[in-house]
Amino acid sequence: MTHPIKSASTRAAVERHPAGDNFHDMQTELPARRAFVVQLDGSSEIADGQFAGRVEHVLSGQRRRFVSLDELTAFISEAVRESEVSQ
Image (tube, rainbow, N blue to C red):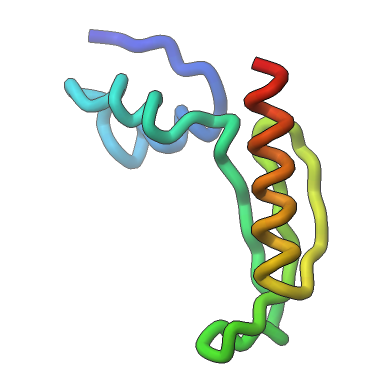
């Protein structure tokens, strides 16, 4: 059975996890509008709760640098809210 693949991120997930019967479940549980790339820089001390780096919303391409977990989660919340409003 073939399934339409709508985005590069979904294609990559399918390549790592062959389609089978769970493809539809994966696509609805992990929608592209909620996909982010987070890159932590060398100054991050995760065990101490210090996060710094860059985050990108895959769907919109919006990027932002962050210097705290609060800034990271604020960006993610904003991007998800905006993408779900536009749906």
